[in-house]
Image (tube, rainbow, N blue to C red; front, side, top):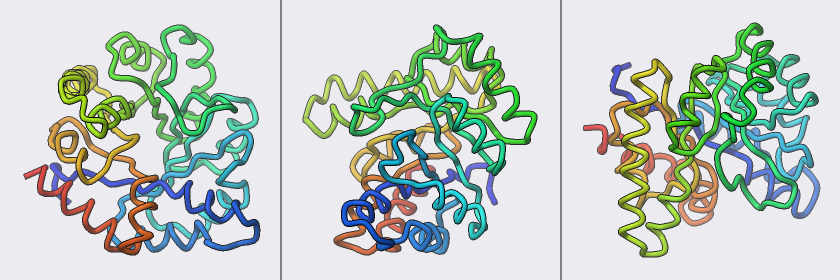
Amino acid sequence: MSDNHLRLGVNIDHVATVRNARGGSYPDPLRAAKLAEEAGADGITAHLREDRRHISDADIDGLMEVLSVPLNFEMAATPEMQRIALRHKPHAVCIVPEKREERTTEGGLEVAREENKLAHYIAPLREAGCRVSIFIAADQRQIEAAHRIGAEVIELHTGAYCDAQAEGRMDEAARELESLREMSAFAHSLGLEVHAGHGLTYDTVQPVAAFPEVRELNIGHFLIGESIFLGLTPAIAEMRRLMDEARL
């Protein structure tokens, strides 16, 4: 595979959201994960929240058993989640901020203020062989802190750019995109692997996909929503096409 290949991680959280709205076992997030894998996803992302509002412990158990591509296990920096990650030892662990009252992850993790705590928190995960990623805003101070605590990867929060673009605030969208571009290059210069995600759609993905330092995009809610109209395989295929086109 080319060094220029931009990986696509498909987040299946919202398949579980639909399932949990009615209870029972349908639609099955594991089936969605396997379909995504067959459609060209390079990895699967799942966020096990403390309140278990979508992905469940059983889902994580099942994903670890059936996936052939890497699992990116998103989690809050809590002792319970650390124990679960150490039991499963997924390919990657992405530490994200989490608040019970939020609908979705609202921003990046505050690493600089919690540097010592997070350094000790991620050390056992790294020792277990997990690639540790930190989900942060495109902010130099946070990137430097993530580097100091020993994270191998950062994932830049693209939500502010996507929201501004969707709402027609084009000057703001341009500023947010430029910040993402500059901080991608800065993180890369420190030796960090750069990922990005949150709120990306067909309309917003290409400018971010074009950043040469970005190695992976994690996209979920939009793809699951678009699959209602297109089907999951065509929805992923179109995102893959747009990413590849931008990379050229």
